[in-house]
Image (cartoon, rainbow, N blue to C red):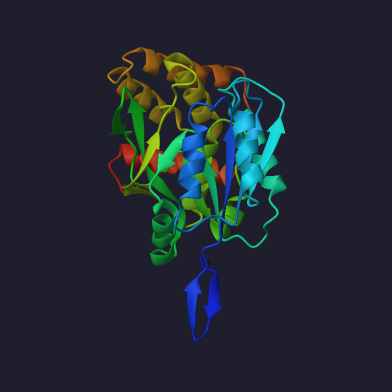
Length: 302
């Protein structure tokens, strides 16, 4: 059963709003100060924020150390560079280093926040309001807007999907899904499992989050597409759904390249017998929802 934790206040009970943030950051010296200042300006501040310098070589570590020295609720951690940026397991290792370092144990919401974002001072307050009015909401976050050449535009995102750069998890949902997998596709598996267990996932379209390194730009178009194809295999995508996804991507930017990269990553993972999600029920759920989507039936799939 999905329930909400409440905190008694006099004769009334209001939903708790204690939240913590974990930020894995690698070579974000150009933007991370904007992210830190955005959090510092929040009308509802986090109980704790752990920022993990994931082997940066550009001064990111010095920046987070400086702010951590000024604010007791910010912790700066450092780990050696462990692998290429496109290795999602490396990102998750940095995330869990931060998670394991959390001192707060009574949090109600957990946010994974990238180190190249900025947002309005009431961002987290409004996000928490969304969780309060919808007790089935397990995963939420604002709409990502990519910034380039002093211009910003929204990244395409289905309403029932939240970009990995800014995800907030209700504690009950976090516990139910068992946290995040340390593999490519973690930001699909978490939502699929949450949906399977009855939780809702939602992007708050009226909450704008500026993203200074657009999704996938760090690896380049080809590597990003290959990574996504590999992640889709690990997640357990139905082969027919994947084939049609590649066909659709063929006519989207980057034309041809993105489609070929997806197919290469998926087929390559299959030929190497890459381990898939160790959850038969979840893979069955994912494939059933994908087939329903192809048949134009009601589905939770994007």
